[in-house]
Length: 208
Image 1 (cartoon, helix red, strand yellow):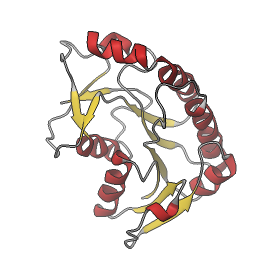
Image 2 (image 1 turned 180 degrees about the horizontal axis):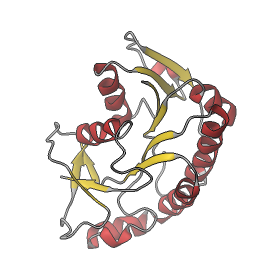
Image 3 (image 1 turned 120 degrees about the vertical axis):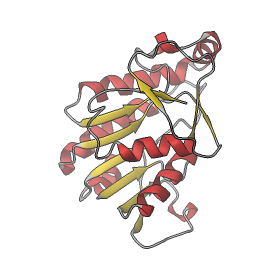
């Protein structure tokens, strides 16, 4: 499979690139600063692109079988339209390139999933309301699109090793008090969704 990874220099994106290469996929890593990706193994191509630059997204998506997006916030407290603009451009780019499959990194508490937040997570969401408002606007566009998306919503992420045995639900009960998920397991879940239809056009909450 030919997969474009957006956010490839981030903590989760870099793991996804590694997992995709390990299973034999052809990977294009999209980065604002391609020089930040110093390792260039076989089957890895690096492309320069920007969330606000539609042309660069179209160029990167063209010829791919699927897109795996781990694009995250640069600043979670400042008011911004970056997430909304990015999602609008990505959907447009995928239409122009005739690519349908998208696995997108969302967040626990985004776009109608705030029912799953405990009091501590609600406090964080309140403090980061600018980010979540921007994220929600972008997800309105995604959920209304005709893309074959899986919109993964993890909780607090850790840098620990993969543990497996992940839980996934649209309505988790009982809710874990302080849910978490390792980035290794998150990346593994997202890679699996590239060819798994169990959560097609849905936004599962995932956690350990």
